[in-house]
Amino acid sequence: MRFRLASVNAASGRDWGTGRHDVAAWAAAAATLDADVVGVQEVDHLLPRSGAVDQTAALAAALGVVDPTRARFLPTVHGSPGTPDWRPTRPGEPEGPSYGVALVSRHPVEAWHERRVRGSRLRLPLVVGPGGVMWVPDEPRGALAATLRTPEGPVTVVSTHLSFSPPRAVAQLREITTWAASLPGPVVLLGDLNLPGPVPAAVSGWESAAQHATFPAGRPRVQLDHVLLAPSAPGAPAPRVVASAAEVVGGSDHRSLVVDLTIGAGH
Image (cartoon, rainbow, N blue to C red; front, side, top):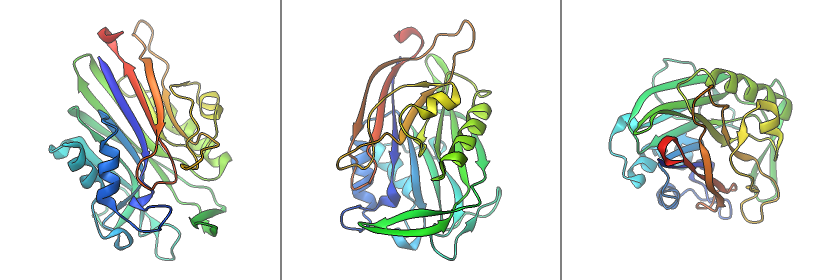
């Protein structure tokens, strides 16, 4: 089975050049990747700054995913990060204006899984526009995983977005990969890890499925966005990478990482 995955940093649907939000244009651009599963970071949900839109639902619609059980948003922050009114979310709280990660699948989802990880205690630089930087408290992070039903058996895909603080991002990655390794496999983790080049694979012991510079989008110099493959269980076939690319999607400041895998009988 051939399987296409995409890691997309939505940048809240904002065009980095103009500073304007255009969620419909961003979702349409993401849909042109034609991925079976899209993991998204920096997702707004009903936030006034981006038009109070459910961005996860907008992406699902653009991908032609009409079954609501195949798309999910995991809030990590209530309110807009970098503003005085944000606060960490807590499991079980009512849905409201928030920010986090999402995942949308064209395959049926057998089970959803969530993992929340704390941020660092530092204040970190946040780029707020061309030439602008704001120092803000580090926010908590989360990982959202979907175990998919495919012709070759279950496959689990994890979407996450890690801290801007490299030491904290390393600790978060270790925590998330340890948790994700117990999920039904093969397991693939994708996201904006805020760690460069070979570091995520070295830290996690997982295989890097693609090596492309992804940031900044216009003239990328460093790879911050990654797709990692968990070590296969003994006797189980490992996914094989067929192709990969880093693609411009809308006005995001990150390029999206796209990976084609074969799993099971498609080897």
